[in-house]
Length: 464
Image (cartoon, rainbow, N blue to C red; front, side, top):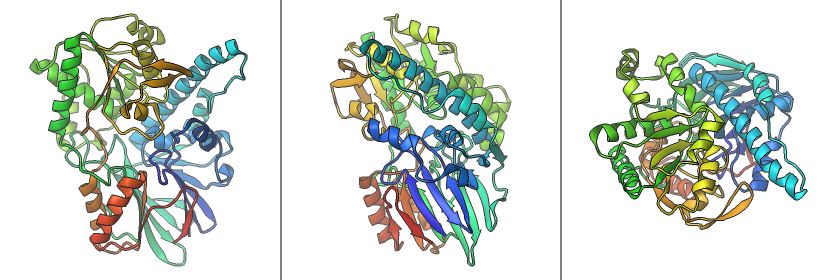
């Protein structure tokens, strides 16, 4: 049995791991890689394996850095099942459709400029038609119900507590030996509201796990709330706009809920709040369809209808059309705009930044981790000369950073994740993390008596 690390290896994005066992190939996740532009294009367009030879794909959750390259996989010849938890499959379908629209629109926007310069035009990585074909390959699975992936390979999806429908993947494998491989996906935080706590590993031989925050704990949700309130209140007091790049599922809903609370309590001025993402328009309905993903208290809350105050309020508007989105940039009054993409590499948030880049009263509020070389990371690092849609702008808009909203486990949560595996794990492979966090977690796990903690390189493989 071989495990190949083909994405999110010594980096965070592009989750993709290939298991070869009993003559079959099983792909764990198929995410988009975000990094330096040329490298991203190369990695996302070309797979280091033959897609048509895969037996199955298992998806941990719907975030684009885990699911976003599935349409390209199908485009390149894959025709097998894409196993995913029911809610995750439903979210993935609309997120991939949204991803295709963004890529098509961005290509169209960029090509207009390239054509004027007489330069070669670009094509989107995949189209809505590719997504439509991909959606037909999803096979919906329930939590905690084993299913056969390939001969001698049985999978069980368990709660990861990260976003709606997120799972860890437990693989029980018979290849002359009985072994259990546990793929964490993205590990959630037990203290967060709405979702159930993550299920911890048990009786595991090999753990493939994320280490995004392996070097530090998170501020508490209360501290995150206070930080958000301070930045929003200050900016609105200046008469500026608050631009918040955020993933359309999970982070956006948490921000909406907190802004609602702040306005209700009188902690910030009552100004319009816009969620400018086609995907987010449908999220509330999907949440209601999947009560199995929530704890008992939250399920009762949603069923009661009281969730109207959590998922929407009188100052909130979900922006549906391109025309509505463009109209926001004609306005100068104070407002909050939450828009995709989360790392500011594509989508409507770039148009809002382009139109407000020279407004010193306004702010770009970063509330999530930003991958290296993305526009979001460059803003965090203080760059004032930034490129948007191929053009360089002098940034005058302020940049603020509030931590504590992460849906990823912090350092202690990651340590506990490994410690619960009954002391049986022969290998721990750290992925989905940069070198610093990985090294810090590796040192702590070694001190905990955990042997064979690895930080594999992209493209490397190991025999299990």
